[in-house]
Structure formats: C-alpha cells, structure tokens
Length: 142
Image (cartoon, rainbow, N blue to C red; front, side, top):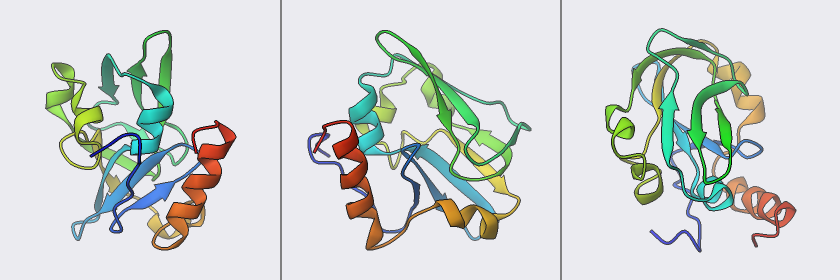
C-alpha cells in the first residue's frame, strides 16, 4: 500500500471527520482503525495505546491515544459500544498502523450498542472517495 495514494476498502464504514474506520462483523462487533489518509495526515506514530477491554466507547470520543513526533493525539471512535479486544501487537510494534492500517494495524474490537444511530455520521461505498478527497483538501493533502 502506498500512503501517497490512500486506499479505502469497500467493506468498511468511515468517519471522515475523524479519519477512522469500522469493519462490522456478523457477531455484533466491529474492528476499528485509522484510515490511510489519517495516517498520512498524522505522520509517523511512535506509540499507540487503545482503551482497555471493558471500556465504554461513544462515537466521536476517544478509543485510543497515539504519540506522534511532536504531539499526543486522541483517536476518535467511529462507533459506540464496549471494547472487547485490543490489538496486542501495537504495544511493541506501533508501526503496524502504518504498514497495514486496514489489517494488522487495527486498534480495537468493539461490541456495538447502536450501529443504526452511528450510521448517520458514517460514509460507505461510492461516497467515500469524494468525501476523503474533500477532507484531504482541507489539509492540502490532495
């Protein structure tokens, strides 16, 4: 994957404002991560610490904290629910977020509480590319 040309897998729901994604499973849970554009905008991530298992998460509120070169940033969740798992690999290898943002670089799994309500702020399918391009223009990344 090239971070110079962000990609957006079709099977994900995206919260464009916060540059995060959710992959909803058949088990009532969603895997959550940072988009390739979000990584490009943030720069290199030196530390990634998701909220702990059992934490209640609201859409648009913090699900993780990442340390960048000159700042610490809260990663906002695309969905509401309860954290049921965190990516154990990120403690030792936070670069996984850069190398495979839609696979091995996932942050947490969340048991969904109200996906129907969360969907109002999420984008999927054909609308994703144009929404991401508009967001990138805000940061002069197009």
